[in-house]
Image (tube, rainbow, N blue to C red; front, side, top):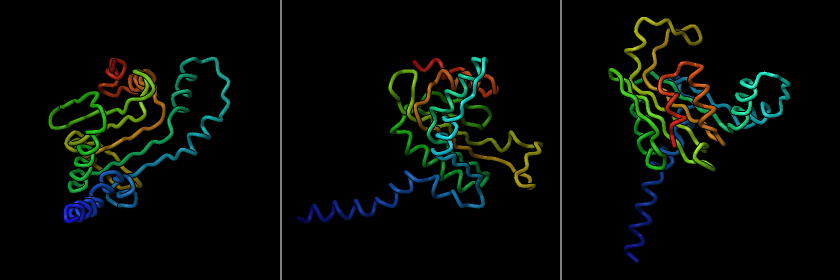
Length: 186
């Protein structure tokens, strides 16, 4: 009996930590020190219903990829304490994901994680984590709502039935470093 009470007490104490780790996007959604983007499933459902008749196979491939996404969430911050919290969250979440790739360059770390989908070419979740980018932004003129901004940490989470080949093509077109390695996931 005493053992069960201790286990229940420990579980209750761990609940806030668990909910924080699982809900970092909700935690920072209203925080003035972050840029938060959450494209809801309804938006992707609307995009899926758009009937675009085009002869461009590349445009059709991109539309097909967008239609397979059910959620896109992004958090961007320059605040050190939030960056540390986001980094801790990614580290805790990484245990349930497969690290696809890591890029380190002059203090900047970029990591791609996936949660396996229906086959080797598809994933249920693609998580991209970029940390330490502020010094690479020196001299840039990035402004959000008229205010000069610097970024330290970026997290992007895509969920759905995501075809890695299509994501790889898109990242190549956008010149995103490392995107070509998504095709080589197998």
